[in-house]
Length: 107
Image (cartoon, rainbow, N blue to C red):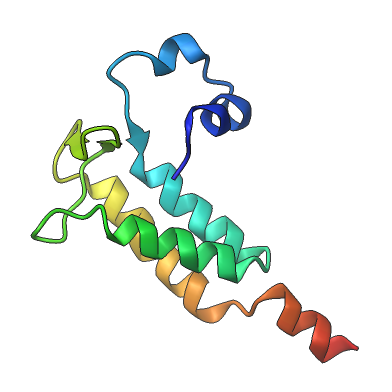
């Protein structure tokens, strides 16, 4: 998941917007897992995916956002979009080889 500087740089969200009650958007984080995997950065994708799994509620559910400072789910709970993004990330992570494996095979 992202810290303030990454959110600001990658999404165009201002620091002023981040100082409010907004949290880390779970769907965005799971989409990042999928993008990392599909671009051959499987190790990074796996590390992020495993870190995100630790934020699930005791029932394995996710809200819309996470307030990392206090470890609390924010927004709609449970959030279907978050769970759809999680489900989409799993096959991308499972089925995509790491870029280093591709480079070794083509050498």
